[in-house]
Length: 419
Image (tube, rainbow, N blue to C red; front, side, top):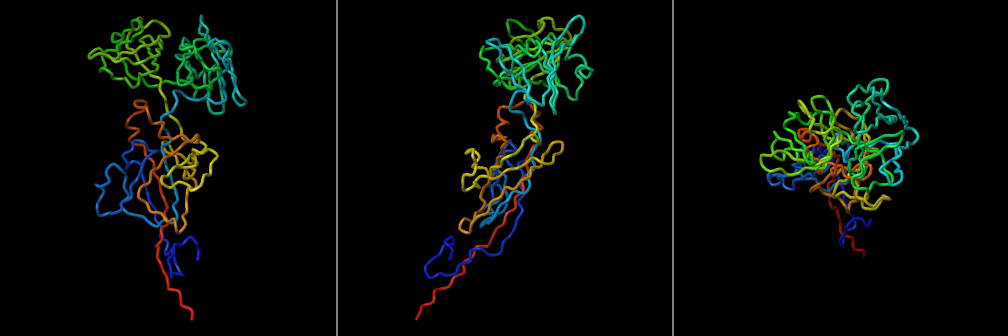
């Protein structure tokens, strides 16, 4: 008799499994109270007659499952776009190498990324730029004073490329630095703390295309490094202004960039931010002022090489990853087909159990990780206000499980007494 079967004295026959039963369990994160579609739990009722009210604040499957021989994730549908976890967009194939002790960086490219250094002319002025193209993207690096590049049609012969982005700020170590000057393939940044690293990847600080709000120029004042915006509720844009950058366009379409830090305002004063202005003095604002905000933007999950699924308490019994932090993962998923707002992820996350280890479902917590083993749930932290709240309410993950359950029976007979 196998050692895997429990036994008692006088038992020499034991049938531990009988009559496999198969179930499909459909779970949606929208039924959980978690605000993240990538980290949520579901409760399996142990007594369905007690009703859902005993399990408020959790998604509920109104049945119990026990003596599970095999569990498998068959289908996963997740949101395609989520808030970015960096302030800007990463541009692959470019490295920034610091030159000496100055805040200057040499822009170097890897094979597959093309760089062109040029000058945009709008007589009598000239504006240097660096154009970078890769198989997927095209960007133009410009200084914060190169407003004609922004204000003129960049789809002309000079910058013609699909979805060209003009960038005048870079993000290094989570701090945004304006590009003050460009000379061939050298860029000069504003160094706030004289502590720029010797090298950095190219992360472009992007700003929203839509205006955050419009206001008359008389509602804005800038004195001694403090920008006061009246006509808004006090603390109205605290979350969005905190340690960020805004761009102002006045009635004559002049551009002003302000590195900002939110300052609490007294009741009735308005919204106050401190910062440094690049461009003409704000005192020259006229007409209606449009304000745009640098933001985190969105991240396309279809670009992930692989996704990891954690399904607690179903943790693999053995360590099987060279990265120990991945040993708790239940399985892997591969981004497959996609629609406008959703991605179908496929794979073979499954686990089978020995007769002595047959499982029951009380509660499962699902967590999805990116290809670097970082929880996608973490990208939702500290990102309020950067995406439409209604977008979050319509984001949810759907997971389908196939469960094989067995009847566990005991069939035994006493040993015969030998004569």
